[in-house]
Length: 76
Image (cartoon, rainbow, N blue to C red):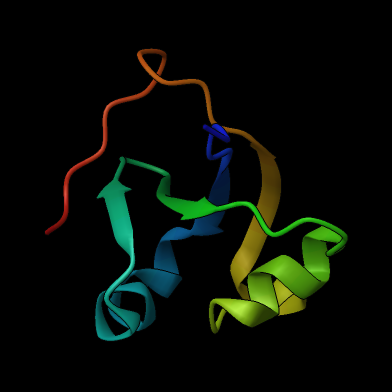
């Protein structure tokens, strides 16, 4: 069975309403919104963000591999 890889997208706090409207799994932190999405092979970070409806240039701070257990997310 193939293991699903998730990515953690660090979004600007101002993006919270947009993230909620998109229905993405997220956690609102003091200085950012952390969004967890399924990785899509062969997509760049920008393409991945845009696939999920996020503007890479204006809404995203960074993207990294999501390590289960290292972060805790809830759907709000």
